[in-house]
Every structure is written in structure tokens, then in C-alpha cells.
Image 1 (cartoon, one colour):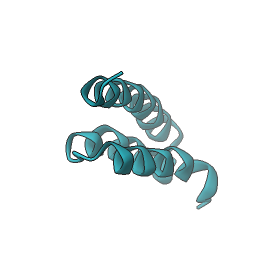
Image 2 (cartoon, one colour):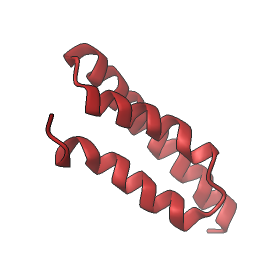
Image 3 (cartoon, one colour):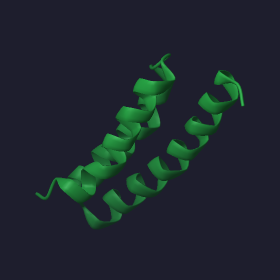
Length: 69
């Protein structure tokens, strides 16, 4: 799998998780999940390095489980 294919596959995966987090955050009024959903939907298009995209993506995916407000 080349770099571009892996990147777009990662964008699709984070987009699906982003949509789930965003809807859950809206319905449950859970701010951390809502912000993580927004960040997951936006950040892959601003990153051009696949490694840092993975690192930030995993951090945003884990944020609702780690940060309790």
C-alpha cells in the first residue's frame, strides 16, 4: 500500500469516527467528545505527514476516554 492510499484510508476511518463522536457529543451534551469529533473531521486535511496524522488521530480518538469533565 502506498503512502497516498494509506492516507486516504486513514481519512475515511477518522471521518467515520468523527461523525460518531460529533453526533454523540451533540446528543449527550458531552463537550470533550464533541470537540474530539470536530478535530477528527478537520485535522487530516491539514496534515501532510502520515505518521503525525496517525499520532494525532489516535490522541483525538482516545481523548473522550482519557479526559473526564
